[in-house]
Image (cartoon, rainbow, N blue to C red; front, top):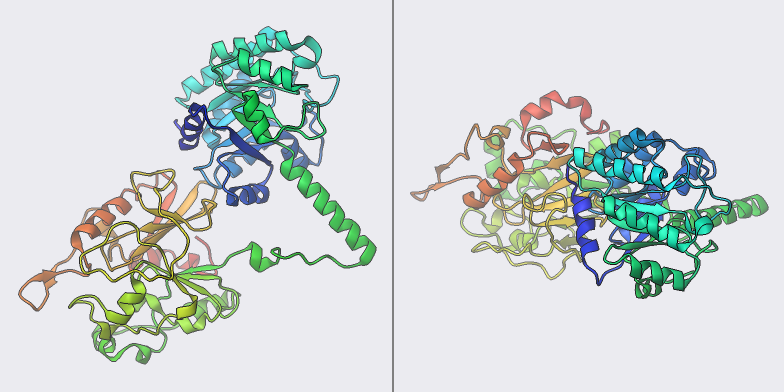
Length: 534
């Protein structure tokens, strides 16, 4: 069970010029904040997890299930960002170590560290720590290596020793060398007391990467990332970073509230700053006469059409005010049955595919004349195109100079399936997928709705789910000019997009596929329509 995150971490470790900086997080909120800042990896602190989940100090009171559950949640917020997780002592003997490693692998953890304290352990920067024998410690490492092998995993195993305090540097290095010989990938000497000791352990354990635990006020010197790298460390964890920051900020806020009876107003912490409401596609206009006359002629042949409740009505029924509560409206494309009534969203930013604004103003070729579009449909000041995805169809509309600052990149956990995606919030929760073929600028969404659970919104990649399953093909019809056409601007690209989306249908990746015109899905999922949930 190989993990993309573990593979990525191994690639980072293989680059000897790089130091991996891992901020310590302990819950979903602190992890999301760290993800937004773009760190290469995160570290789940055992002390922080114990404090936040149990309200207890780090004295060996937390269980495997509690640690694994927290690690799984954090690891799956963005599976492309490796999570290094504290695994304490393995929570018991060799059998429990085996179970711990197996559970962490299944949870999506990229790396874990095991230590040589007894099960009733304590924080590594406190005094009077106890140790198990070297043989017992190596039994733990051996059990971890064997568990990884049986699970066909590639989780990075970090051997930690607390032996420096009571047994000295040579014995501590001896324990780490023995652990490396058994198959540990990274060495972790806890509570190193000086730069000289740090340099010596890094030198003596080469080429194995060595981890530095940055604990301000602890037993180790306070080192910057640059200083640690110069000493030879390849990975640095900051376990108390979020915990200490939150403790201080919350304590000050509570003292202020008790003293003044009011809470301080801080910029960037309003509900609207913390939570985004995003709509994907707007369906039909409720007033069909608002379409351009040329488009109304086409619509008249598509009757009967129901326009109520429209998107705005449905949002209001669920307690969301479209005029004030919606931050973003993303349109898969600007065909008449997806654009709805944009004026219902006077404070939202509109996000559209590359070339959309030019298409609305000038059309594109004989099948998409300008008179079927409304150039003023979208609010020009609040509409932003995504940057061009790197391929341009013949006759395609020109990109707008008013673009978002995103960049296209392969989907982190499936780069071959979707080579052009945008991590919209930069936290792995929502990906815009380049889905060419149907109309210029056509895009899809991949949204995480729970840990390990996703929904793929396919827009008009096809109009019948049987096409995704390979049971039907793309319909072709007389174009009125002596040739054949389909509902897609480029049939070849549409087939490629359909093939890619169709590979998601087995549900093996925890992804549910929903396309815009799937009547069967609609009829069988009425209870999930908003204010229901996917």
